[in-house]
Image (cartoon, rainbow, N blue to C red):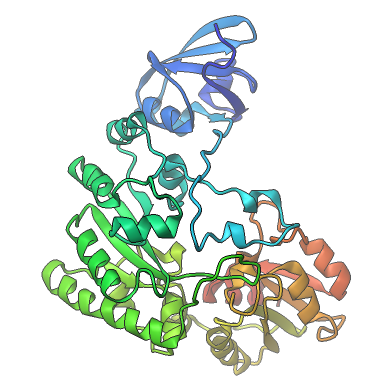
Length: 432
């Protein structure tokens, strides 16, 4: 048997059925009930049965392991497979954020993934430009839904120019195929003035709407530009943002009357750039693209009005920080907390790593935080770090500065907190 068949088992959960059956990390899972295993998605798809026959390879030995699951619950099996090799993007998008990164950041940030499996598992956006017929067949057979699609424009010529791939197929045709096969999709349009704004934005939203309800949502987000970009591209200015929001609002009114939901949504940054008031939370429906920056700020504002201020007061002065675009909203909430007697300050951090135009907290570097906090914090202060700025598994900023590094430089204690009103209040209560 070829050694490259199947997928290596990375971990066996303690007390699981796999452990009881004698499976070990390093074994290769070849098949389940006769179905070949290529990755964790195959494991998820084929292991939802009561009776399982696992074909396993251990060095040169071939094993057939029979197992029975209660209610076909895959977690009871207890197998974690080694992660699949991610398919990378061959496009050369005008606005590609990865190509605008400076050197010296952690390796994972430079990965340009274009993998439908990452889209299904983690909500990563893909352009569908590298799908094979086998990939399409698998998506339909295994119901890998929803997928997250970067559309940008339904005009093939404009889209192909934007993604730097003149051979890319018609995106409407690709979406039609999935819609006809009842695969759900969330779509995004990265707004680039001079390319896909104005009439083209109207056309793209209209074209995508034809595939509703299989195209479940459409998000319009402004292009993100760093100081390290090599290509000339116009940023979204105030009037660009106003025009885009007005186009979106016209569609929202129509869709709401017809379907009871708004379907298309403007990213929070568009409202901030347009200096327009955020709409009420009802307009965001069930927040289908909150991870894409659509409804994040309005949700924070909504939650901050309803949460109770801390009932106990810490002795220490507390400092927290955020990006410049969110500063005013966090400041308003911390003022409410201060009125309850908590000594708390919030600092706006300007992004020197990517440039002043990058204003979100999630792209702040450890060095920029150090630079701003140094000389401001006193020895007994406590710095509250919003979790969005750090890698979850090991509390490291995107420039590889760790929480411990930060503490050593600024000379004060730090605490990582959940980036919500509830998270801030709970952290204050615990510190008290």
